[in-house]
Length: 117
Image (cartoon, rainbow, N blue to C red; front, top):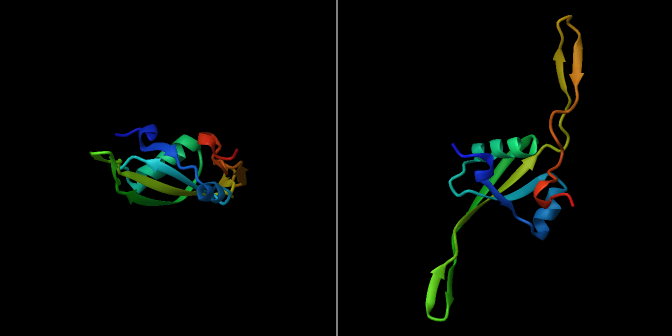
C-alpha cells in the first residue's frame, strides 16, 4: 500500500493553478500509478480537507536532444483536486433525543506546499 506522501509528489505552481486555488481547486503532480480514489484519500489524510472531485491528466514525455545525444523527459500525471470551501457543521442526535452540532470537521484551504501565501 502506498503512503499519502508517495502519491502526492509536489504542487504545480502556475498562474492558473494559483488563481484556481482561490476557488478551491488545487493542482498536484501525483504518482503515475495513482488512481482517483487513492488521490482523494491522500489529500484528505495530508491536508484534513473534504475532497469533492478529482480530475487527472496523463502527460507523455517529450523528446529532447543536446547535440548528437537524444533522450526523453519523464512522463507524469497531474491531478486537479476540488475541495469543499464551505463544509457544513456536523449535526447529530444525543442520547436524550436532542440535536447537537459539532464544529466543522475539515479545513477550507490548503496552506501546505506553498498554497495560500
